Amino acid sequence: MTLKVYNTLTRKKEEFVPIEPGKVKMYVCGPTVYNYIHIGNGRPVIFFDVVRRYLESQKYEVNYITNFTDVDDKMIRKAEELAVTVPELAETFIQAFLDDVKTLGVHDATLNPRVTENIQEIIDFIAALVEKDFAYEARGDVYYRTSKFAEYGKLSNQNLEELQYGIRIEVDDRKESPQDFVLWKAAKPGEIYWDSPWGQGRPGWHIECSAMVRKYLGETIDIHGGGQDLTFPHHECEIAQTEAVTGHPMANYWLHNAFLNIDNEKMSKSLGNGILIRDLVKQIKPQVFRFFMLSAHYRNPLNFSDESLKQASNALERIQNAYDNLKHRLTTASATSEIESALTDRLAAIASQFDDKMNDDFNTPDAITAVFDLVAEANLYLQQERVNAAALQLFLDQLQAFDQTLGILSQQSDELLDDEIEQLIIERTESRKSKNWARADEIRDLLTEKGIFLEDTPQGIRWRRK
Image (tube, rainbow, N blue to C red; front, side):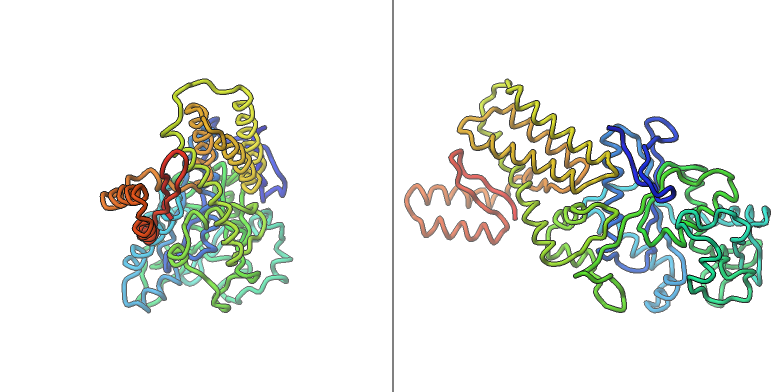
């Protein structure tokens, strides 16, 4: 089955055909770095990481760019509030973002360009729009002339008349039309600024991504993504800017993930119901949150609650336990390399099922169903008294192949126990042999406190981390 993706621009699923065979140019809008990221920000971060991982598993070379907006009004206000410079503020929260997403198992982007590193490219882009009469200067600000771009609204399926009467837009007498949006903002006294043909100022939000996409990926890219809240105005404005200058489509496929709600309510500052990722992962394993995010299709709203996290934790534990049990049995399994053809056929069918679901617009919940089918087969096989090392390795390889895309397994069990815990396990074994049950139980409790759980199996003591 070939990969099909839902394209927001055409509002239908389309076969994915990259511009250059075997290569994918992909841009996902990154954060404005004035605060720590919350769990709602985690949805696009995790989903597009899975998109990138899956494409790579299918042998595509992915050039994955996600930017940092490191100067804007929010950052200027926050820097003033904290009595730091805007660059200092940006440095703090860029590092915080990178730390938080690494905790979630997100792979590094190919590149994380910053707005402040691309000011000249942005100025040149605006100058090209002015030259083509798609933009105009007004008292040090520069605005995009939306009426000039006939297809404005094509991504969000709106037209200028609907926008004029259906969306509240702040009145500004510098604009020719209320729908015109800012490309360059004149600096106010004391604000950070750069010199430009229109005076001292800084870029508007939308123009930043247009300039960086063209610089790092080219005039037309394969995939442009982000949360559905970016469809309008941000991505709509990007299209208008870029296509006015280049005359070519900005992106062939536009992907947008739906919102994350908290206890059936939209996350918002007014409700005070935002949860920071760095706070959440102090309470639960990061893999549990990642699994939860992938348990619903990315275009469907997802509800965050204690109950949904508990369900995700229990489900993920089943997968992790199967993985750990396979690794444990591998240490004592017979070395025969023969595998029943019926078993290889079943595992191949499950692998094909996983790919079919991922090829259907990155349907992660149904792909996870394939993972559970593999776990069921593995658990059935592990019930046998004698197991085959080659078969165990086949199960492990397939689970790891699935995890190469999903990123939900903990690899901590590969770590060696430290000397103290090794000695405690040996002592507990000796205590049991001498029937000193009290000491054996005491050691088990101590190991539990250290996050080590022991299981007595016919093949010996098996341990796993909490």
